[in-house]
Structures are given as C-alpha cells and as structure tokens.
Length: 432
Image (cartoon, rainbow, N blue to C red; front, side, top):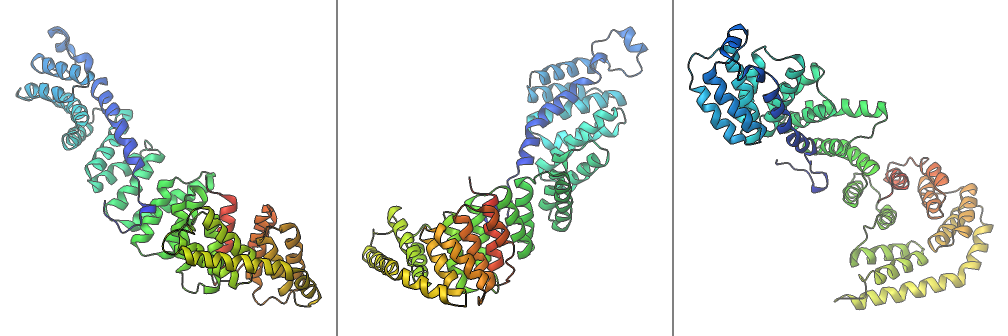
C-alpha cells in the first residue's frame, strides 16, 4: 500500500494476517454444520422433512462436503458443478449449495466467489443468529483481503453493531477506513479506541500507534505525528522510533542551536552517535562549552568503538584527541582554584556549571552538591536549561526520582522542555 510514511512507522497489517489465518477454519465449519443430516436421507424421510435436498443434488453436495472436510477445496468446488446443473432448485437447496461453496471458495482463495456465496446464504434468512455473526465476520475479512474496503466496512460495522465483533474487529475497521482513504473517520475511530484503552488501563498496540503516526503524516499534522512517536517510544522503544523523534525535535521551529550539545547527549545515551563526524562534532561542542572531561570521554569512546583513528581523517582525529587530553589535564590542575572562586560568587552560575563539569567527568558525588548549591544561589540566565542539566546529572548519578521531579519543572519552549520530556521518557522506558 503506498504512503508517504517513513519506514520506521510503516503500518504492519498484523490484524489482517491473523484474520487470514483463521478464516479458513471458520468458513469450513460453517459449511458443514447445517443441513448435513438432510443428505443421504431415505425417500420417505425426504417426503416428511420440511427442508430437504433431492438425491440428485444430495450426492454431489455430499461429495463436495467430504472434499471440504479433507481440505480439498478445488475438488469441492468441482463437485458442486454437478449439483448446479440440476434445474428447479428449491430455496433450501440453493442455501445448502451457497454455504458449502462459500467455505470451499474461501479455502481455495477465491475470495470473490466466497463472498458472493456467503452473502446469498446470509440473505436467505435460514441461519441462526450465531451463524449469522460468524458469516458477517467472514464477509468482513474476505472483502478486506480482497481490497474491497467499502464493503469490508459495511460488514465490520454490522459485526460491531450486532455485538459479534471484538477488539480485532475494531482494529480492522480502522484500518479499512485508512486504506479506503477516509483518514478523518480512521482517525476518529482510532482516537476512540485509544481513549477506551487508556480508560481501561490497557496499553495501545504498536499497530494502533503506527497507524496514528501514518494518518498524521498523510495529513501533514506534525504535532499529531510527534505525539504518536512519543507514545511509540513510551510503549515500544526502538532506536528507529527515537531517531525519527529526535530528528523532528531538532527541526522544530524555535529549537535553539545552543541545545545541540544537549541533544547530542540524549543521542549518545540512545546509541545514536555512531559516525566519525558525529563524534567529532559532539566532542568539539563539549570542549567549547567548558566541559573538557566530557569532550575527552566522547573522543575516547569514538576510538574505543573503532570509529575514530581510522581512514583518511585519522590525523584530524588524533589532533582532536591530543587537544581533548591536554584541555582535560589543564582543567584538573586549575580545578581547585575554580572551585574556590565559584564558591565565593553570589551568582550561582559558575558553581553550577563547574558542578556539571564534574558530573560529566564521572564525579557525580562531588558535582551534584555544587550544582544544587549553585541552583539555590540563583542568578541563572536560563533557569530551565539549568534544570535540564541538573535533571540529566541526577540520572547519571542513578537518582531517577529526583531527576524526573526536576525535569518536569522545565517549561521553556525553545526545545529545552522537549529534551527534558524525552529524558523522562527514556528514564521510564529504556531501550531493550
């Protein structure tokens, strides 16, 4: 099915597959459960019975049902041709032929014949309520498999209205609306289903959320698309969903360029810093921001993973490594003086940043108290950005509760609040 969706959110028709697997069993049972006792009766018994099948029809019909039991579907259809040739068939004979033909055709993969025959049997008025419910479900599946979504919708709606449908029926109805091009109705049905799931405390299926994302993409509704991605990473976290989500937050209007390093930190935690240019850029940003230990750790990681130190740019990688090592060593030497100076300042910015540098260097026990003290002093130019860093520092120190509490306070609309929200999502729903 064509769409403009990204591969990470392509709709996988899981509901469609499950329906196809059980439909043959369902229709075969329907073809054999009614009227079988009328086949092979004596002439006297036929005369007394209200609904009968004449011997000239009963013989090929019995042969067809025997073939159907043996799952020889094409043979069953062939046997029915002899019965079709008998003239002046009664309504009951037509009914018996239709339901047997429907089962055989469905088993043989002839959806058109199966649907036509089932509809005829259904409209005969001879089925019990339970049988009608099964046939309605079968017709919905047959038309769905055949790509006749408008007709599939008719029977899916009927199944739900008559109380014979289930959660899978509703999912199939939503997909049928989507595939028929009625995105507005598909979105409404999907929202209703998700609201019902939320109220009942049920997790949405991955197919539902991917369908939500696909509808949003087709409608160019960027907000709805991101909302769907956020629910996907919260319920079914994968690197692919996260990658799509982070690409969109960075391209969001108003996203501050100064947050690139913060975004890279989240990407690194998600395993999405993988190329030499990405390692180089992140390390350089960390060094420029005054976090030499962090810059050195990033370069070291690039070398450890075999990404840096090889290829035509290996000499450039080595220069960055030397710079990171020297800057980190110099920072260690000047740290005591920097700490003393920051502690004397009435403005907490220097003390906070110094504490964060210590956390990024792996010294959370020492750095966190400095960050907390700096935050308490105040004077931050961007308080929400400071809260973001404090929340991330708490996470790095293994203090999840404090981290989430702090990150929830971040409100800035320049991308800071988005990053804070995504750190919370990652903390609560880590990648497998």
